Image 1: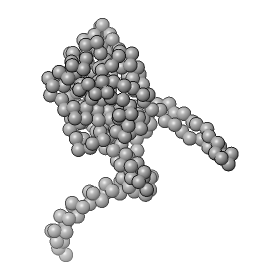
Image 2: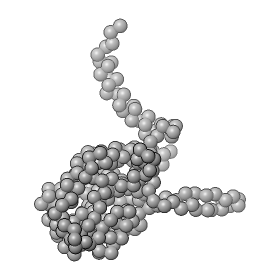
Image 3: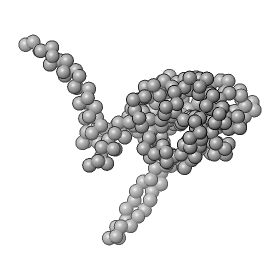
Length: 240
């Protein structure tokens, strides 16, 4: 029996959308993929009006912060609430890994340019030189799209402190090229300020992604997709 070509074309167009809807809004959560929470968990005990004790798990979240981006805008944890973002560290005069890191992050940015709730925030580790004006010049010279990409500066204490909050390294090191040492890893943060990631083949939470490693860069891209789908389901459930 011959199958009508028009029917085949319709099936090919409609099936991917149906599969996506099933993936995001499926009723059985056992089939829904999610990412793991990174960082220490806290168990909170509470007693309701009837005297019943309940225990809830509170996941680690990034503490409050306030930095200034390349356009002089204040960027805080609250301003990124409801957004999924990737956090990284760099400095404008970096002679080694920063250009490659930012190039690869720009590729990630391009892949999610249609997703309005996805951002990148890159923190300088050299705030004495990387003023707002210097960061503005940097993004122009590097031809970086800052539509949803913040290059931020602040005090050294705040910047190095937030690096520790992301479980990443950032510090001055006179023996390192350019005088600073920072992680080439990035972290993925969800809409509530929780660090999220996949597990490796041994069942360990990876926590961060080396953006100079092609395999881990691909993992980051895939995990952003997973977190995006989880966020869509989260927003869908809020409307019920």
